[in-house]
Image (tube, rainbow over all chains, first blue to last red; front, side, top):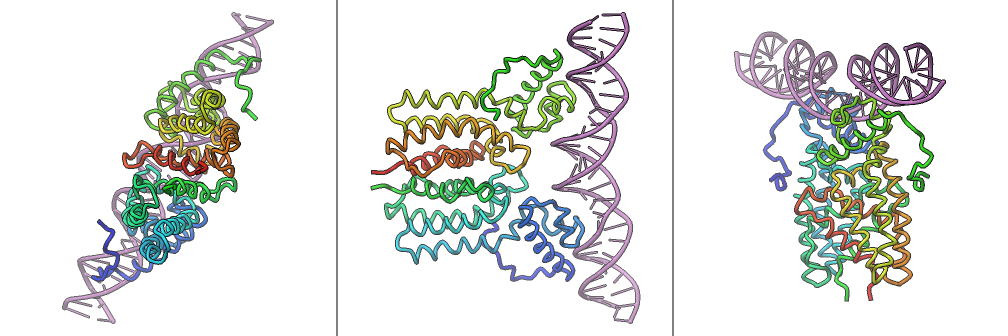
Length: 195
Length: 195
DNA sequence: CCACAATACGGAACGTGGCTCCGCATGCCA
DNA sequence: TGGCATGCGGAGCCACGTTCCGTATTGTGG
């Protein structure tokens, strides 16, 4: 559900001010997320957008809805990059590595996103689900291709790998001594079938 | 600092009721952590212990202090297990693997601990520091031994490895599809020098 | 152009949780 | 037993999420 229809062709027309406010909120949220992370206080976001808190909840009932709306494009781009990479890379495992790099780039630059994705807070459940809906199929395809080519172990599920990578991104960029990419490289090395 | 003296020989005698309350609080906190995780509400812990909230803050000014006090023994045990394993194992890398297993066992059974350890919440800074103080030296020794024996890559710091393992433990046991141990096994496989 | 219903808005108000502060109780020692 | 250092309780303040409803705005049919 929810993973296929992202082009509301049948325009459920809304009032002009509503659309205006929705856009203001998206802009404000994006800005707030940048400086204060994805759990920036609701009131702050509302203030930035010049609206009342009620307006946020009307447009984005849960925080997850707001976060998804802000990052939807980038997540979709990552999803679409999968097949492209698979087609353009020398080997499936190279495509997989590049794709994961993309994913990491995304997570690492979004303050608090990786944390939120793994949080058990029910507020973020939908966020978790959205990421999985979009990315697990892509990752599965890359993983399958690499496994079929005998390049990686066949006993790792896309879900697990994605969560692992997501987890390793937590706290990246907050501590110079912690290099998430380095560990993810290790993880992928461990995934490889060694001669 | 704070990592070496854990036997207050010079007894800074406190009042009897103070010591009693401190113990009640430790018991109550341990129980609360078990059911509600390490961020169980302060008021709940106080109620369980039959004291006022002020008493908690007097004995344990920050949440980290309380968590540390509750888990101190187990962390110390993990620290002490390092050298023991190194002496009793066939190879340094086997000792390392076993030791990490121990660490994972600990983290996985403590609801919310792994999350707290990586949280950027300043409340938990001291917790993070305590774990590192105690465990980084031990892990460094294991890692050095294994690297010297040519069993693992020499370019991974104990700090990084511990944080990576800690991160991978986040959310373990909350989702049957996510097996932290499996990924950590992968990580360690990637750490190994392959023939 | 106007009236009026549908739609959307704002922000006061409530619940929860962390943390502080100070008047009061308690243990300790002489 | 008296006096006082030490420790205690919990009311109260703040920050934040979330709800709710009186009011304002929009767009449409007359």
